[in-house]
Image (tube, rainbow, N blue to C red; front, side, top):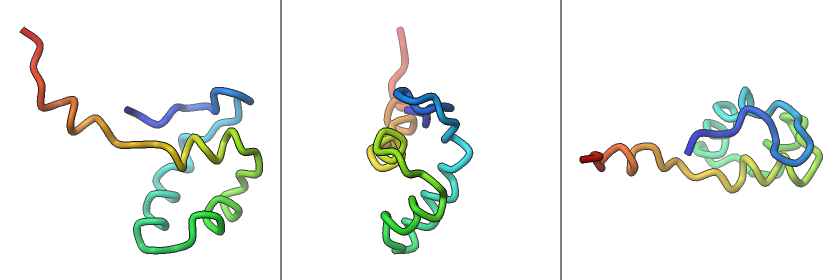
Length: 65
């Protein structure tokens, strides 16, 4: 899946924050601190980034016939 441009619940733009979030959490930084630094206060926006799973590589393996 691709990270949504806006939060599904409140409509706040969040896609531009994905690369920073992903890079900082992969380096081992605390997820709560990263989300606070990025300015995400609402639970709906926070869960969009925390629950995101990169499925594009898995889905690209399959061809439609």
